[in-house]
Structures are given as structure tokens and as C-alpha cells.
Amino acid sequence: MVEIRRSTIIDAPIEDVWAILRDFNGHDRWHPAVSSSFIEGGDPVDAVGAVRRFRLADGSELREQLLSLSDRERCFTYCILEAPLPLMGYVAQVALKPVTDGNRTFWEWRSTFHPPENRRRELTALVSEQIYEAGFEAIRQITARGRAPSPDGRPRDMQPQALRAAQPSVPAPHEITRPRAGGRAGEAAGTQRTQAIVVDRYGGPEVLVPREIDVASPGRDEIRIRHRAVAVNFIDVYCRTGYFDLLTPPGVPGMEAAGIVDAVGENVRGFSIGDRVAYACPPVGAYCGLRTMSPDLVVHLPPEIDEETAAAGFLKGVSASFLLHDVHAVGPGDVVLIHAAAGGVGQMLVQWARHLGATVMGTVSTEEKARTVEELGAHHVIVYSREDFVDAVMRLTRGRGADVIYDAVGRDTIEGSMRALATPGHLVSFGQASGPVGSWDLGSLSSKSMTLSRPNYAHYTSTPDDIARHSARFFAALRQGALRIAPPTRFPLAEAAQAHRHLESRASSGSLVLTV
Image (tube, rainbow, N blue to C red; front, side, top):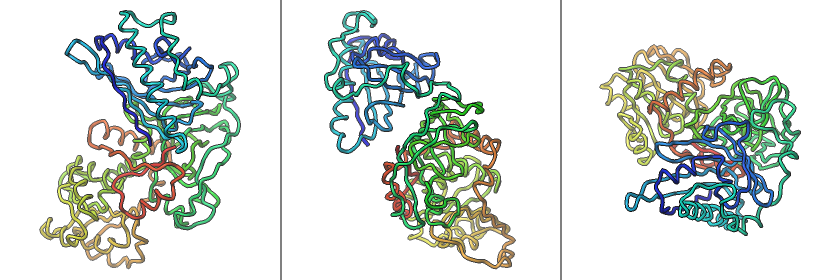
């Protein structure tokens, strides 16, 4: 990933500079590279989600979407939806700060994106020098003249030569067959090609092979999503190995992603082209750049949640929702033990259980992970190598044990989890990162009158009402500050095999995503 930061001082009050920049459709009146621009669907220029389609001086065309805008902070973020250059995953922010000395303005323009390796230097220079620096200079000249930009007044002679040379031409607006924002059926383009990860046979990470596949236009009851980020979860490992029968080779793995609605079937209601969405549901098929699917279990993203954060946290947040509220209703006074507390779901469980009033204990494999879990609010963190977790739980609870234990580790911890339970206690086995848990005599559960649960994600999220309830609960917890999602570890889509190796090594803390 490339990260670019450029900044400058503008000799003008921050109010004047912000008045120019906050107009998401106004860059054709000040940036020398832009000849015309319009907002698709007639949305307001400051509406989060608005999409601007603009043309460069040579006829090249781009589409960008406004992701956030704050007049109080004087900043906005946006992303590229379509461009003639391979600026994959491009997300940028414009932010202004007042400089009290001389009533001037500090302007920072920054972005991240994934260029092809052989064009990294070229595209980095183009964005930083030919777009950002050219924009700085244009605003500097406009404010120096003491007037707002106008179509007749902007400095056309500043068109960056490298930008003109690098941008291939695209059809004029009336020649483009892509659907418009808010478009309905009949406007979607036909079959398209996209990059994907295909599993031809069950096996290790090496069976995850990059390949180009066909993606059909949506049927009457379907939508097509252009992915921005795809999550890597242990359920993907189970599908890859054949332990779960959700994937039949050859097939594309993955159950969780976030992106932008690209096309909409004519019977679909509630979704429009340009909507920001996320999903975490079967059927598998998320490891790709473009996907056609039913919208039944797809949810809209709140304005404050970007696609990468959504992919990093949606399945885990929804899982934590039903684990803490439906499988076992955690409340004040409960003692909760969470295995693999530094993992993706583990971090959600730690924070949310603490918010619900429970005493939270977490187990981890390293001291570094212990620090992470402590920062998330766990009352007690147990490092496997430092102390037997059963002894630690009994010591910390004065021999009583934990009321509920959430165990996603499996074979290495299941027997100890049973011993660490209170009487009566509830063991929730929802994963097996270390291997299958094996067979157990049901009679052994009576030793502590324990309850054993093995919840299946799909059974708690199989209807639109189910996923709406859990997603609303999860998004509310994020807004309330009960949950925070750490930046995920990122891998390019083509490196899915390496992402799986990283996940299975149990070296990761938090979430993993594939960037598209």
C-alpha cells in the first residue's frame, strides 16, 4: 500500500479556503486538471455518499464518492469508484487547520491506495506532485487574487503534463453504458471479468490461487457489489480444507466483504447504485473484486464506518452480538472467560462484555497480545506460557470458576474450559483454531451441571430481520464507544494464501482483510 501526505500553508483565512474546498462538485472551478463535473442523481454537494463524475481536459473520466464531511473539523474524505488509472482502493482526505499567525490556513491532503508494483513510483509521483501540489498552487493563486474560483477565472495553463500523458481517454457521458447512481434494472452492464481467488481442491493455503472469473449482471432480484475490502476469517480456513461443506471445488471462498453497489436488479428495493454496503453470510464467494448476489442479508453502512473497517469487523461484531445476547445473555456480575482474546472476535467480546457489566478474563499466547487485551478493558489477562489458565481462573474467582466461557480455540483448551467453569456454568464452543474438539461423554457435563453450546453463525443470521437486528446492535455499540476496531492487517487480494498462513499461525492480533 502507498500512503501519501502533502501539506502547504495558504495565505488566506481558513473560512475562505474551506468555502472553496467543501463543494464536492466545485473542483472543476479551481483544479487545473478538471474541465467539468456533475453530481450523479442530483444529490447535494455535501451529502455523504454523493458521487461526482468528472472529466479531465483530455476527456478522461473519473467517479469519486464523498465518504464523510465535517464543517466543524473542516475536513472531508472521499474514494475513487472508477478511474482510467490503477489506483486501487484509493481513499483520500482533505483537512484544514487554522494558522493563527497571520490568519492563514494549514492544508493537508493525504491518501492511501494500492498501485501495481511496476507503476508504484509513477503513480505516487502523479498523485503527490501532479494532483496535490497542482491543487495547492491553484488555490494559492485564487486566494491571492482575493476572489472565489469561477469557470472563466481558473488558471488553465497549469494542466499537469504528466497527468495528461498518463490518462487514456474514455467515452463521453452519453456513450457510457455503466448505470447511473440510483439506477434501476436494465441499466447494468452485462457479464464482466474480475480478479478472484479460486480453490480447485481442498488443502492448505497453497490451494488459494489468483484467477480471473466472469461475473454476471444482476438478475431481477440481485445486486452487484464492487468490493473494497474482503475479510479473512477462520470459517474461510474451514471451507478451504473441506471441514465445512460450504465450498465445493472449484469455488471462490469468503463470506464477508464491504464495498459499493455497482448494479441493481429491477425487483430490488432499498438499494441503489452507489450505496455503501457490507455483508457476512453464505454462500461463499467474497474473495473477488466484483460479485453478484442476493441483497437479503446485505446491510447499508452508516456514514461514519468506512468499507475497510466494516470488512474488518462486521462478521465479528455480529457474532459477538448473538454470542453475548442470545447464546448467553451476559450481564452485570457475570464472570466471563474469553479464549484467544486478542483475536478478531475475542477483541469484540472483551470490550462488549465489559460494557455489559461483566468481569472479563482473557487468555492470550504472548505478552504483546496481553497488552492489547488489557488496553481493551479486560480485568484479568492470562498468558498461556506464564500460567495454566484453569489455575488462574480458579485463583482469580476464589475457586468458583467462570459463569460463561467463550472458546474458539478448540482442541487445546476444551478440556480445561470445562474444568474452569462455575457450577452451573455455560461453555460456548464457537471455533476450533487448534483443531477439532473430539468426542466427549455427555455424562461428564453433569459434574458441574454445565451447559455446552456449539452455535452456528448462519442459524442466528439467516433472515433479513436477524441480520438487521444484530447489525443495528453492533453499529450502536460502535457509536456509543463500547467497541472500537483496530486497523486490520492488510494483504492484497492476490496474497490470500499468505493471509491464511498468517491467520493459522495464530500470530495475528485483530482482523485480517484483503484489499481489492
